[in-house]
Image 1 (tube, rainbow, N blue to C red):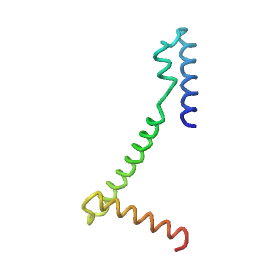
Image 2: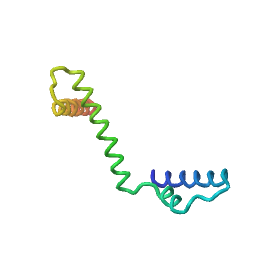
Image 3: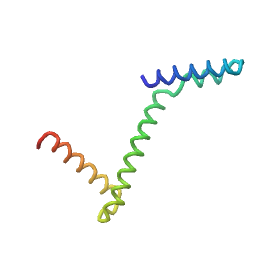
Image 4: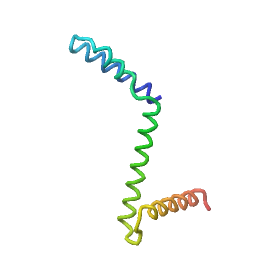
Length: 92
């Protein structure tokens, strides 16, 4: 769905540029611009966002808790806190 929205927006941008400049977009550029990213590009982009967020959380935990000495332990702490929050939310 996001891909279709992006393709539609890119199509509107190309039309606006052609109208403003009075010139047609070069065909090879138009095809690449309108097509947008492939499904694998979107998946990789989403994975990159998740991994960056996870690293930021681990890095913050590592900085905030001096007794934690490595990212692996920071990740365990984050995971255990999330499990505890989920249990509290369901009343366990």
